[in-house]
Figure 1 (cartoon, one colour):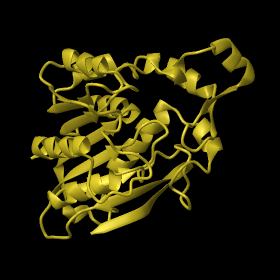
Figure 2 (figure 1 turned 90 degrees about the vertical axis):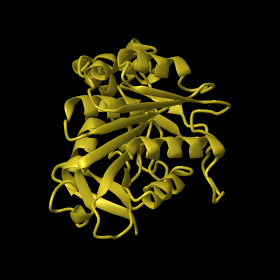
Figure 3 (figure 1 turned 135 degrees about the vertical axis):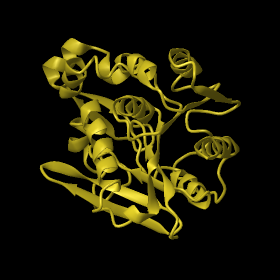
Amino acid sequence: MIQKNLVLYRENKKPIVWDAFFKNTEKQKPLVIFCHGYKGFKDWGSWDLVAEAFREADMFFVKFNFSHNGGTVEQPIDFPDLEAFAENNYTKELDDLDSMLNHLLSEENTFSNQIDKNNITVIGHSRGGGISIIKASEDNRITKLITLASVSNFGKRTSTTGDLEQWKKAGVKYIMNGRTKQQMPHNYQFYLDYKANEERFNIESATKKLNIPFLIIHAKEDPSVKFEEAENLHSWNTKSDLFSIKNSNHVFGASHPYENKKLPEALQQVVSKSIDFIK
């Protein structure tokens, strides 16, 4: 069963659009929640194929758009709502992940009988990896954690550095999206939110707090987030499992749009390793 573009409506908050991939059987399945990265979305590239692989492995796989990622309920792909994108921050993303967990584990979730509530894995890609680490360190409902090409330090990202004076003065700065050619706005509130919650957003201390199985997957030649960030995570939590992928990139050989019916070789390795780890 594939349920696309389900909507979680929340009081006084933007809705969250999400997908569920699972086999509709009597059996309760491990819940796997996937968090996309910066300038990402749930329907990017080959994430549907990834979801299908987890479904075939008899898991309940959920992927969702962060509420302020720039997509809308009507148009969940790409970035029609740049005003929302400008107002995104790490606090909102952590809150979104919490909302998804609360909903999926509640009786309001139509599919709650399909889910083993004691077997919950969160997977985060890139910036979503950092969000997943922090959430897993705070929330004991999460029983396993997998990061894909994760960042290890939010303070060193372009969204929290650069010409701060100019950013403060203008109230906004822009980053070019190479694929869509949009100027993606970041309001200064992003920096203020980061500074106000700097301790909470410290990925190193969050990683050190983890006492659940933790798998770190990263491509050796990742040009966007260097492999040493994976080594950092592993050094801060030596019980973690570090799995390196050779001859690949930040998205493990995928692209958007992705027309192939088969996963790229590197991403297939990622999926196989992840499924084995969960099982």
